[in-house]
Length: 418
Ligand SMILES: Cc1cc2nc3c(=O)[nH]c(=O)nc-3n(C[C@H](O)[C@H](O)[C@H](O)COP(=O)(O)OP(=O)(O)OC[C@H]3O[C@@H](n4cnc5c(N)ncnc54)[C@H](O)[C@@H]3O)c2cc1C
View 1 (cartoon, rainbow, N blue to C red):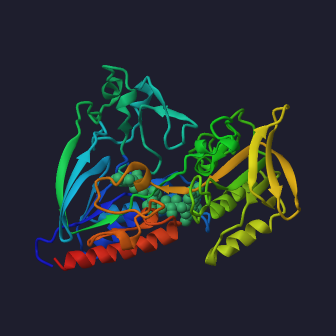
View 2: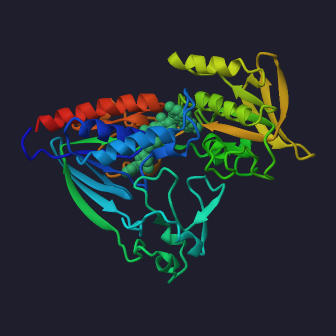
C-alpha cells in the first residue's frame, strides 16, 4: 500500500455498512461512510427486539456507536448520497451530495425547539402511526444525536425553532453541497425496504387501519412507538386479543416478489411472542405456506410451537375483510384439515418481504449490476466493488454482519494492492 492509498467507501449506514466500516477502520484503514438518511442504524433501529435472543437492537447499536466515536479513521456523512462514480478499483472518484439537515453540531437535544414548532408531520420512523414536529430527533437511537427539520413541511418564512434554540443550532440558511472523495474500493450496503403492501389488494392493507405490515408491528410493540409498546389496534385503540399473521404476503409470488425473504417467518414468530407476552390472554394465528427457520433458528420455531395459544394454520390466506358486524375475518384454505376456515381477529399483520433499495430507487450512482430479483449479487460486480447485507440478498442481521466483515476484508485487499 502506498502512503497515499485512498480510503474505503461504504455506502449505507445500516448494520451492514456500520460493520464493514468498523471492521476496516479497526484494522487500520481509512473509511468514508455515506448514509442517505439523517441517522445511522438502518432498518433495525425501528425494531422492538431481535430474534433469536429477543434483545433490543439498541444494545448492539450503542456498542457500534461507541466504536465509531472512538475511531478517527471513519468519516461519517449522513443525509448524503452518491451522485456519481468514475474511475476503477484503486482509484474511484466519487461525487457526494449532502442535503442540509438545517441543524448543526451545536444541538444538545434539549428539545426546546419542538414546542415552538407549529407543524405536525407523519413520523416516517413510525410508518405514519403517529406524528412528530417538523423539527425532531429522527429516532431515540439517532446517531449523530442531532435534530433534523423536514423543511418541505415548514410554513413559508417560519423560523420559530431557530428563535427557540438558545444554542444557535438551527441554521435555516444551510444549503445542499457537493463533496468529492477518492476511494480505493467500495462496499455497497444499501439494504432494503418493505414490499409495498398496498399492492396486495385482497388483504386489505390501506383500506382497513387494522391491517398492518410486519415493520409496523415492530413499532406497535416498541416502548417508544405510537402506543408506548402497549399493542393496541390502530382503528380504535382497543387492546389486541386475537391477531393473525399472514405469511408470504406478496413473497414467493410471481405477481409480486418471486423470492423468499428468509426472515419473515422468524419475524412473525418473534412478533407472536411480543403479543403473547404483552397480553397473556391473547391468541395468535400464523397462516403459512411452509415455515422457514433454517439451521440454528429451528429452536426459535420450537419455542413458539410449544405455546398452545400460537396456532399454526397451513394455508394461504385468500382474503381479509370485515363481516356485516364489523368483525375482521381472515379466510384461508386449511390444507391439513382439508376445508376452508374463517377466523375472527382484531388485528392482521402482513408478513411482507424485503425488497432491495437498489431495485426500487435505482443504482444510486454506483457502477454495479443487479440480479433478476434486484439484489447486487457478488458475481455481477466490477473489480473493487463488494456488496453486503440485504443489498446483496435478503438475510437476517447475523448473516448481514458476517457478509459485511467479508466485504470489508475484500475491500481492504484492494486498498492494500494500490
Ligand atoms: C419485519 C422484519 C423483522 C426483522 N427482524 C429481525 C430480527 O429480529 N433479527 C434479525 O436478525 N433480522 C431481522 N430482520 C432482518 C434485518 O432487518 C436485516 O437483516 C437488516 O436490516 C440488514 O441490514 P442492512 O444494513 O443490510 O440494511 P438496512 O437495515 O436496510 O440498512 C441500509 C442503510 O442504507 C441506507 N441507504 C439506502 N440507500 C442508500 C444510498 N443510495 N446511499 C446511502 N445510503 C443508503 C439506508 O438509509 C439504511 O440506513 C427483520 C426483517 C423484517 C422485514
